[in-house]
Length: 112
Image (cartoon, rainbow, N blue to C red; front, side, top):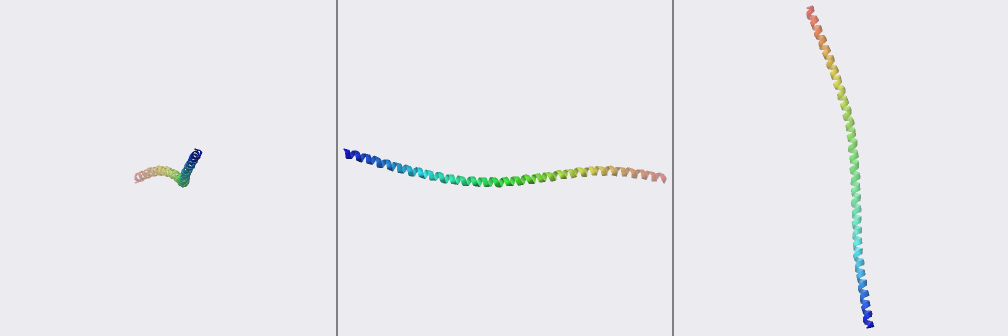
């Protein structure tokens, strides 16, 4: 009976060791898979960061260009205002000259 008991314990011990080895390899494979996934995720995040930085630079350039265009547009608006004022002044002067010409024509007709 002692030999049967020893055989039983040896069998249980061997089964326990086999169970632990299988469990160890299983968790090791899971850990390796997680490491691969983690490395892949890090690469993906790095690529995403690079793309974000690239788009940020493009956005900053575009905003700078918009500011330049806004400044140019404001200066053109100011030029248009100035031209409109000059035009109205020229019209007033033209009207004065026309009335002066009419007056002079009337004086010439009166003299004739």
